[in-house]
Amino acid sequence: MSRFRVSDDEAEVFRADLEAARATLAARPGFVSAQIGRNLDEPELWVLTTTWENVGAYRRALSSYDVKLGAVPLLSRALDEPSAYEPVEPGTSLNVDRARSLG
Image (cartoon, rainbow, N blue to C red; front, side, top):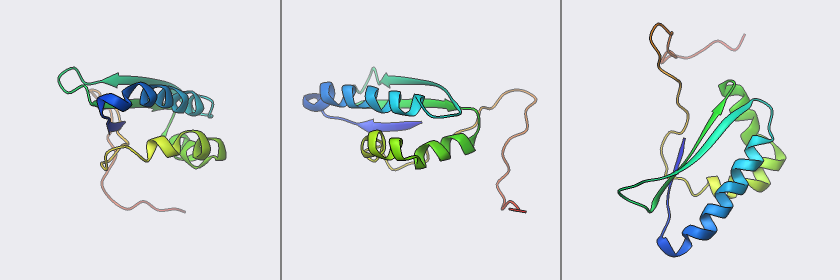
């Protein structure tokens, strides 16, 4: 989830750029879906919500050449806050806040 603050005078261009970034991300392996939203109470707030098969697919997508050219410049405008979330559903195990072994 990436949130953006965009002035009214740049909203039309921003929307087109955001749609292009979404299309670039959608072409990557592991992509499931994406939605663009605009806040009803504060229309200068926008959000791009993407869903991936797993966090690895998300991170690999962000490091791909096509995404670095076609989406990262726009994504770099996102508000500086955590952007990766996991679904919280009844009966599921959640990610644990501790270091993981690489081996």
